[in-house]
Image (tube, rainbow, N blue to C red; front, side, top):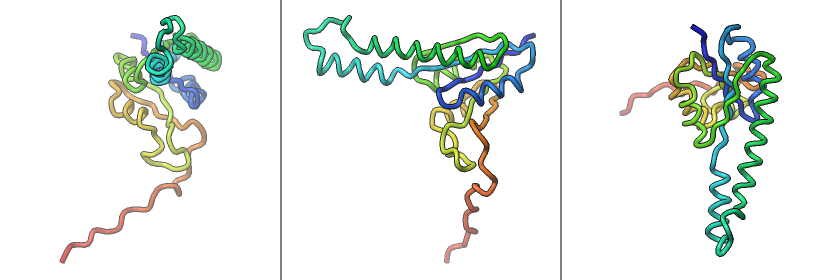
Length: 169
């Protein structure tokens, strides 16, 4: 049976994820390059158009359509760059919606999900994950390979241990 590896590509971390897939995905694995576009910006633009600016204007004049087209073009460009860097057969998948939910849904049935730390990159620890990535790591229905998008911070970036517990009076 062929393994399925999902590689979550984002604008800021995709090279590290693709390089991890090249290293860790079995040679015969089906590799799926996944990019998710959040709908928040288009919803805000549409809301502004409809509520403040759109009185009396036709739906075809809604500027959120232009934003969606630009977003789709940028996603296609990013997925093309990721596929080129991977340099092996892969499938490109572009989804829309709440990013963390779409990633978890896409990973259903996969054998591995590869994603990158995208929070505070200067120190080790939980703040190295942005909230959507933390959600994905906590809820993924398959094993997760979590990579640093650049060099990992040194061990000296760990916070000091908490003070010892002192019993009360």
